[in-house]
Image (cartoon, rainbow, N blue to C red; front, side, top):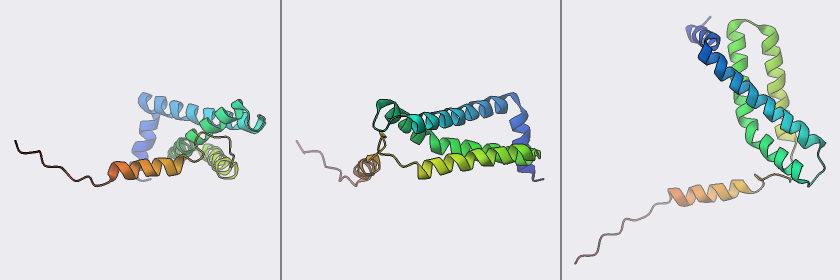
Length: 132
């Protein structure tokens, strides 16, 4: 086993690593629960809007947390946990990619955020102070 993977597995077994993994798995569970609320809510309702916004916001962190968890489980050699983690990760990716919905705060925000970043990064010429 690679020494980096050994260190990762050892860190996951420490108190700090266990706390971080528990917090990460809590984020994944919250993401999946809000996806269930989104699936069961009436279209164009407030609960669906909130659930879809939370799910869309937590999808990327959940995917990354699941990937790290799968890597730690693979380094530890717990193959049942690897299979379960991959299943959860694939399910979140599938629901995120194929659950397109118009009921989200993020709808249309990509272009607005890109324009804001462009304006912030634009070259602004420095004006010389007026001579007195």
